Amino acid sequence: FLKAANAFVRVYRDGEAFEFDAAVAAFDCYMEGGEIERALEIMSDAVERASKEEMEGQEVNTDSKLATSNWLRFVRILSKAYMDRGRFNETSLLLGRAKLQVESASLRLPDDVDLRLALARRCAGSDEHTP
Image (cartoon, rainbow, N blue to C red; front, side, top):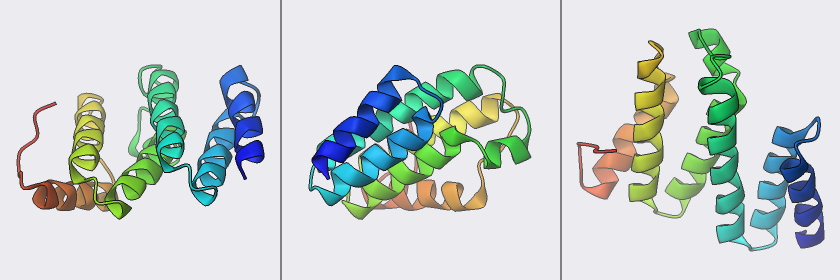
C-alpha cells in the first residue's frame, strides 16, 4: 500500500492530468497501510490546493458547481476522517473555514456538510467557531 501511495503522491505533486484523483488514491492507500497522519496530511494539502484552483479561481460560482467540486469532495473526505478519529476540533476548524469560504461566494454548504459541522462543534464542546 505504501509504495502505491508514494506513486500516487508523485502524480499528485507533479500536477498531472489526474492529480486530484491521485490525491484520493494516495489517501486511501496510506489509510490502508496504517499511515493515518500521512493520509490526513495529503488530504489537507489537497483541500488547500483545490481551494486555490476552484474556489479562489472563481470556477465554483453556483451551488451545483460546488456540489461537484473536487474541493468539496476533499472537505468531505478529510472531515469524515477527522470525525472517525474523534478529532472534533480539527473537523470544526476545517468545516468552519469551508463554511466561511462558501458563504463569502454567496453559496451555501450542502446540508450533510453543515450537519457535520454542527456535530463537530457540539462534540468539541463549542457552538461557536473563530477561524
